[in-house]
Image (cartoon, rainbow, N blue to C red; front, side):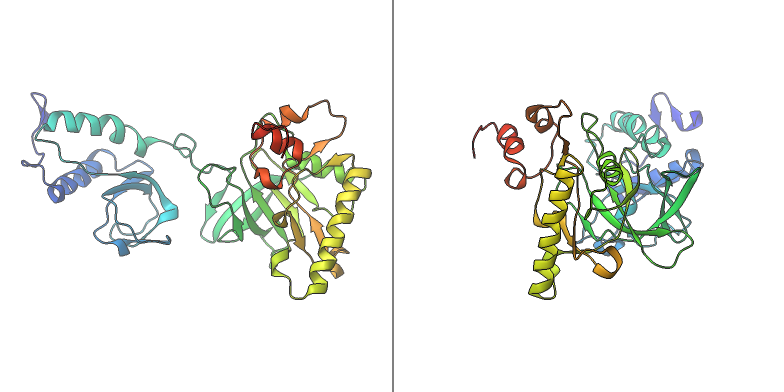
Length: 322
């Protein structure tokens, strides 16, 4: 590298630094000095070079993990780790390259997934993504395969990032479980703890959680949202069983759900589950007599105030009454 940087200047940088020539120089520079890193730089020449988004976009420069595909192959947005933009340097080539060297060369390509703020809870193989979980009452970890796309996810920038995937053991054929991935507050008891507690106390009509980690878990028995009911009797049966589940959770489990909404009631196969409807999502639940006040819990919430318990919504919105 020293023979290409003489008297504080890069000897082979394009002059003037027009975009196409700078990109060509940049890619050659990366191949010469950063070819062993886990990631590399790519560019797009048309919006069709990037797939997997609702709207087509073209970006100047981006970083993604190497996957063995040729550089000119189409890229998927879900694989893009870092997005960059080319700017005119006003002929101040030294300052521009110092900035590139500090923030890009020595940064993004050498970072691991955790340093980049990426998903570190799942693994990939040739067939898709996997999670490794510790099972309740069993030794060792189990590999679970995630479906390629979540069947539901939060479409917001500021949220818990909740996404739910159909899931199955890596050697199974049927998608018999659901994996729920979301960020959780360190000031709240994890949802899995409430689900385990409910199971131990004989609560009926809620999801059966087999495992839960800090930001991932697995629940058995996927169902359909209630707005996808096929007939009125199915909807009424699901709502009836959700009310029963709420009662069981309160009376047997000593747990108050506190976030009842259409999104937290699902239609299930009564032949498999014994219920036409089930209650899900205990993220905002509270064990009665746990010693935590409504105000303390409210400060650690991320739900929609319109659908939360009055004590939670009132405190979180700064109002005592709705």
